[in-house]
Image (cartoon, rainbow, N blue to C red; front, side):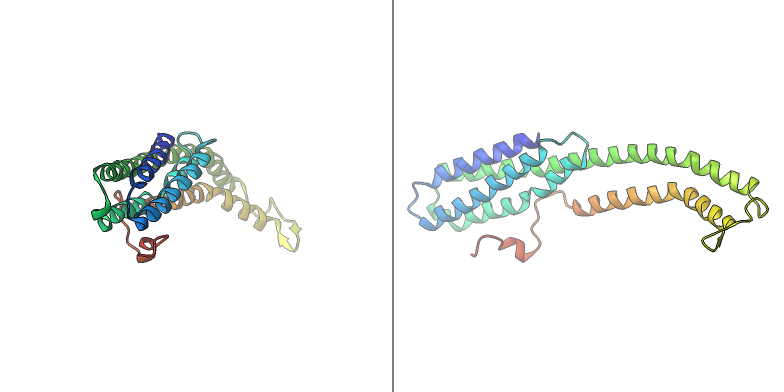
Length: 212
């Protein structure tokens, strides 16, 4: 689906360039060319990232995150508004088609984020189960069967009992460490994709490429 959206955005970029090619507004033509080039290059980069990605993998979500559709929608709308007097009906429709296509990236990104989080939760459940069983066995064995008389030697200047207790504690907390790692990953993704619509909040992002 993301590949189709990227393909559609590249086609819309070409159509937009063709629609304004006959305009007497040279500034409009230059800005549209730069905008279209940015769209095409970004879309091609995303398609390359998706070439070997499989559904549910982070690579798919990363590709969706790397497509800055919000900036593109902002730039397209600003172009259409600032050059309204130089845009005919065909160019206006081309702008509208471009904006409509770019707007589809928002719901698509949210969908793939939801799928990724679900897959991560499934993987988390499995991993914790695999880690919890040996951790529980080791913890119980340490509590009931390990005492000072069983390990009286010294290794590297440290009592063997200390080594055994440390190893047992490490294995016992392994499920918790796995949980923390997965939660941090999911929290980071959720924070990165906190908005569901095309918002451009930073002035630096607004002026990226176009010095208007």
